[in-house]
Length: 581
Image (cartoon, one colour):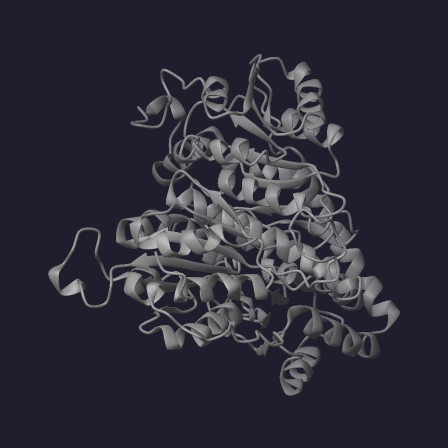
């Protein structure tokens, strides 16, 4: 054994210097130098029993820490929480998740949730050990092109070819992950590089910029397009707004009020981008082409921070009329004018841009003009509200709870809980019935199952590092839960205070709904192949086998008390709540 300072030691020292407190992963032989260095550090290694679980935990941790960083920034730019993370209270919050995987199969296992993290904009630094650079010509087992494999779902994908490059490449990885639009990066770490001696030090990270105030000419152009009082304006907010912080959500409100605009959440919105209790909030846009095109049928549309505003399968009817004037605002240039032409295109921080647009419109529109628009907003809102309010209120003669009953019971017991959602078909019942505050809710924006349960564990770890941790509730569909039930092992191993509520209809309901949309007809006309869990999995027993507590809730009247009891206990609980379709 040698006591030389190696690339692995430098890697771990850089993580500590950059404010990282946890490393998620599933180790293999090529990761042993990193594991040895971690053992000599103050960092906590969080073991996942599957690489995709590790990536999902790191992503949920990163998204939650981003909220903490925003909170700390508003409180003066430093962390003002507890000591559980081993760092000083005046350290900045590092909103990055770090995950270490194992060569080609390990990275391949993690690609599902790497995709989810990329769509969610989760700032991740994903690493994987690799075979030594002078050994790959023999094509050893587990070998593959890691850089190309990760490239599609990473902002930047590279390999550290020499220990001398390690400090710069690590600094670059963190900066790329954190610079808007945020997202995952990937670095391959060859075994020989990590075992090579070095006398280098980590490079300082430096300041991370936001996306800026946007092009003043385009902002002026947007203001001109939105000032005709005879034309209505609709603001469609996407998750790029929430990712820019609470100030950006407040700027969206400021803009909507100045413009007299009605407000919708984009299709598959997965964060709180606008307060749903506001008078000008109308609805989330559902992934139904007729409803979506109706809601998007307006003279002027402002898309702010949007990325997923289209249907799940191809649509025959255009979602936005070619006659509609479109203003696009985003910190991601790719999203500006992506699916509809941009009559004004502003690349910049959504909060800063919307705030400046609000100033322009306050000067250009009279109170009378705004009031006329707001009257029309009220008419549309009244038309939409009754339909949206019925979401999840199934009329079936069934002793199981409806999705609406479940969501209402959860909100009654834990209105301030931090919710990580992968309820899929129960999602819209939750969104329409729970008036979430900014930074209170995240969901699986990518749509691939198996993200939400690991993300909820990562969120629970992140919350434990604050002085006043919120209750964390994972709202995870039964199909989603069954992807990675071994996630509960990590929650139990690290005593994560987490309550998982499963809206359990014992089938892949989303597939049945999509089949009916694609082929038409009634449910009785089909034999749904591979879409039912018969016999059902005993989810409470499964949870208990991994060290969590489990309970089956069959009576709707018991949901509230079961949830209250689970929240009162420390550690992980799983409530399997039977619901009907």
